[in-house]
Image (cartoon, rainbow, N blue to C red):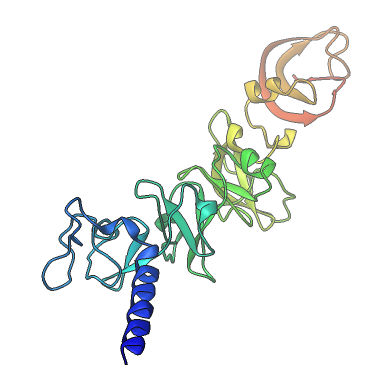
Length: 259
């Protein structure tokens, strides 16, 4: 009988040690658990597994609060130290579950919401679509500075236009956005585009001149005089010229005179 009781005592001790292994730091300086008399959290961050809690910080390091109960998650220094579906709360050196999400805005910067799994998926930081594309993603959510998969729901700077709707007028340093072959009516800063826009997308003279290596500004002349007007600007003087369009390549005559 004594041997049986002794064996049960050893088994209980082993079970107790196993229970505390994941949250071994819950003991306070006096050796007490730090929980209140009812087993709930006292907010000190010392509550052991199984104790009641209202937040992760109520539980001992290595634990997190799940459904009001301190639960073992493990210790960590980085996210790589945690298992699938968990990340590292570096301030507490504790693995905690990835936050559930239904929208990208619920995730931290540099992460997007995987709707299928309901978990935040780490991507990368970016300042423009080109940054995200270089990192292997589809576009950049500039408002969150986060790389995203798929295509930008707002549209893109590049792409063929198959719709009959005209190009909207954009401010300097911006181009019209295209989605599903149509202009969306919105504009985007050229610096934030996924790549260099087509020359024909550049609506302003300075924007076209900035691309002098592959684009040429076209001007319309008014009240022009000279022997080569209509064929060449070599001997053609116009009282006034106005930027008309931006064309790809080197255009032989970049002034179209109109008398």
